[in-house]
Image (cartoon, rainbow, N blue to C red; front, side):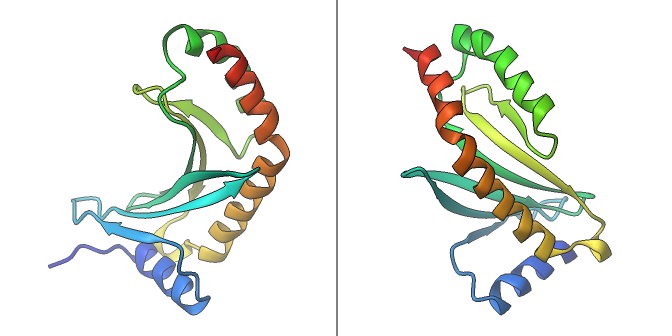
Length: 148
């Protein structure tokens, strides 16, 4: 039997009702009833992978991969103050790095199952696109300067 949480069902219904067909959905059937909605967004000519992670917790996470494998070691140490500055200036977004050196942009949307609103999540995706359209070039310029 599949474990599907109420938020996943609501998001699937929203996508279907609005004819949004750009997501691949992975249902993990784990104890947290996790579903990952994967897609891409085009920003300044770049195609960035993003995902919406939905589970039975109070959190839903929107995650955009800005850079793969390049922000680690000395590069990370040099960029950490800049990333902290971004995190302080943009409250809805948080920049994080993975152990593999990926740079991710996260937005966390809290909501209980009965209060989960896919329309709000869709609006936050829209705000993410607007933010990246405005700031992506300057963020990447700083990163590429450190990588070179």
